[in-house]
Length: 326
Image (tube, rainbow, N blue to C red; front, side, top):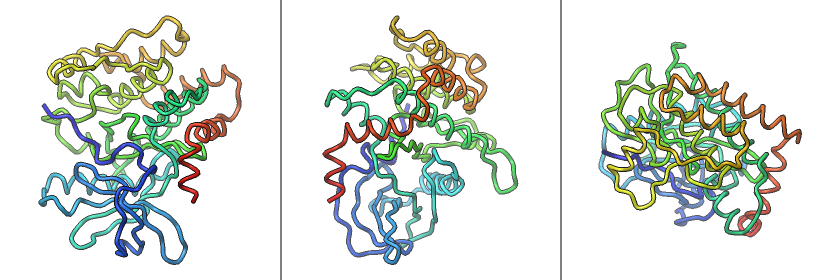
């Protein structure tokens, strides 16, 4: 059994890891390397003429060539360049530099979703329910677009992200919500049934854990787990100190923790549908689940929630924003 290790790391845009040299990639001057993952490294970079800041993601030069890794990265590049949606990390260009494939991605000044909720708890900043639900509905809006992507011939790709978790969702200081890291994605219309378990513990759908055929509803299970977490403050799966074999069985059976009694009945209903063990009992697509979350948001009658997310981000990360502005 193998659990996929995301190619990025938490806190994508918080702290630089290593100062960059004066090298340029794709016409952009590298500023610093801020993340190193299993197969790729990420740099902040600046266009020498316009001053635009971007992210350059390229394969790690210290690893031997692996055709499977290279193929997966090229698929990620393809998807990034197709991701013309406000809730997806957008790719701008791609190429090869000194024999290493790279992609230029939009830069989002902010933090990942996992760190946002963790730091809010540590710093005792209240995250309004409307903000939590807004984040989830924006994730679903991006997924609705990604799941409908077609190839160059116009044929649906049957895309499944496979590694949706709070570390792969970026929250901008301006209130933007962006799904990223499609490095583990699979085009189910073109690729065979996976022969290994790929994904992050705590978010695997039962069919994913059983290595069965996947479709977009597998991603909805992961979003259901994230919704569980943001409205309860608890993990959807109790994985503490459990061995991999036990974790795998829990995912195969869909053994989520019990939803606390105080959770609103409408949200309980959404979580139960999204996290149904049988995919046929889940929402048919991301748009349907998004509309269900929208229904709860409308019931709160708060209008545009994006600015409230931005205000909460500023409250949680005031010191980080001040450092980055210097």
